[in-house]
Length: 307
Ligand code: MBD
Ligand code: FE
Image (cartoon, rainbow, N blue to C red):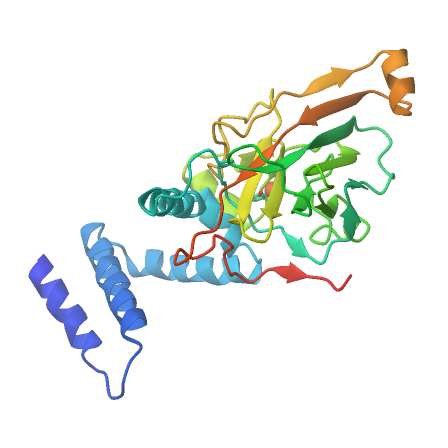
């Protein structure tokens, strides 16, 4: 078929409207259908291949992996790049901490702590201990008291509580309110990188693309304060094999802080711990909200557990 015939077929289907449509949904669906008709024709997709793809999408949904495949195909990072672009165009102050993708594993309702928190439930006494601290400031470096730092990360196997029911509720998840100097600090364990479920549909597709499904070790944050733009970001731990080879394309300059490792007895005693620990200091800078520019908190379906 030629492009003209394909577009005639698609517009015949699109003109079957009998009542008012949502014009935006209709325009986008019409376009997606036309583009996929062209893909089928350009690649001479067989019916068997088509139905294999339909089954794949069904399995992706049943496995709750739709929002796992999207970062793997780069959609989540692409949306971030578009938000960056819109903020630049709106004249929003540079100098804020870079955003990066949320990922599919946030859970709302984590315990709220004032100034400091312990994230791990203490059951992992083998992993390196992590002490992380820093400040939330505006883009001029002025501290923001009472900012909310929501933090979540994986355990030593790369698994997240709630999705991994073997962990205690809200393990490695807390919401920390900054003190009057804008400071937060927490104790946790050093997380390991994440790998897509090896038997799942996402990894099966990645295999067909000749790709791995690994993320470097990382820690997620939502940082918010009244009058400022909400920040969704992550830090990566330096030295990870996948640091610059993240299947979800989320590593960004400015989000890889230094991490110091402490092993000597005096340092351990001073911290009151009985095994090696790492320290990270990282400040978050938030631009002010601007009237008329939508805030950056994105509405999407998220898991939530009553506190
Ligand atoms: C993760 O932990 C994650 O952060 C992303 C983006 C995708 C899968 C697992
Ligand atoms: Fe993650």
